Image (cartoon, rainbow, N blue to C red; front, top):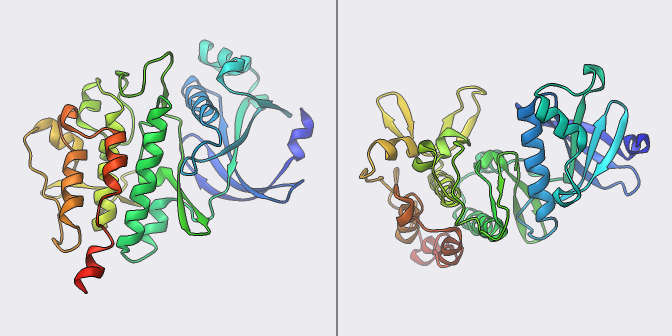
Length: 331
């Protein structure tokens, strides 16, 4: 519907990746700020990412404060804009045709795009938010609890994210402090039927190398791979461990093993040596309380059978003394 074209006004670009561009926009009727992500659907890979994100966000719409809230999704075909519903109403015909044929289903100048309209998170990515501030144990603890709750919620709703990292988490300003929002569901897997996320066995190796669990690299894994990724994030958050992304040269929160000048992702190192003892904490014994160190070891276990699941993590993270130990000791 052409009328949809004037529903939002683009203010500025706030992010750009391999599969789309994110803008800050304003809803013309309510004057409320929103985020708008445009994902061109010219090739099958982009179509699949767009549909996975649509299905995941539609299935948990407005159910958890720490998962990005989808306002609506709009299919653009040339100059026509059509609002889309979720998976239950059927996949958009043009996108399905694109995916099946492996080429653009229309002329290039009128190719398809999906526009995702979500809540706007003024704090940017969690990666940017944390690296722009000094170390803050209480903030770290708050973010860890919020993220653990979000991932447990997703798994409870049969969604495996598969690409958790600090750059895929957004930060909104809440009345009681910063609120994190898990975002970027293009690589997620929505489990069908009655099987829960914990019982689903996945085979497609996907995600970001530095956050990838060892079993993902072997092509046989479960939702516990998300817990491993959280472990990498939590450890990096606690000790401000970063690396430079090889493509963007951006500084990213993430932990790794050093072999000379080479940085080896934890999952890769553990796959090569499952008995590898991770040195937690890495930098300063005073920076991370022992109960958090123990929790990280259980999150980063090389054998997924020995790793916590998201529900165990959600329960245990609330007992961590992080952010209170220093106050009691007077340091």
